[in-house]
Image 1 (cartoon, rainbow, N blue to C red):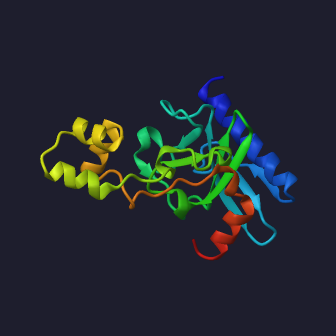
Image 2: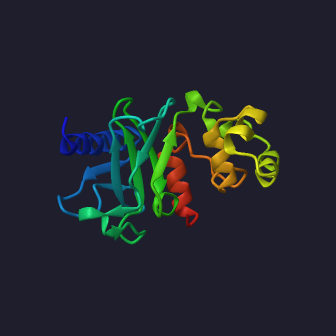
Length: 191
């Protein structure tokens, strides 16, 4: 399938999903800044559909990345809550759909994981004692020596030493937990 076919398949899946859930949904006109219109019975919402056809490269466990930051040719425009109310993120392989508000999705690429593998993703496992890593680095030890002493990967040690790993890292949401009902509640609450 080419990119256009993948995108269209995602749009049709979102419409079908919303209709089965009891809503009225239809595809928007070509060239608009959104793909699907959702009639909740109280308002019309603009939904931008993003479709992934494969898992992230280099990932041993399934995770899917969606471009929810920028739109338009060459990504020169940013998505805003004025142009899009919700994002529908479709994994074509499994026909699963997650829904997020624009504020939940915008400003960065969105990465979703599968709940089946919860707790198995590297950053969900217990974070090594970052203080011990930093202390050993302060003592002048090489990354490889720190990794060997603490039983960690050199990459992990490098990331800790360069501030890329630790308690501040945000966990990615799970595909199955981002339902249309939760997205509509978040939207109603101003998120």
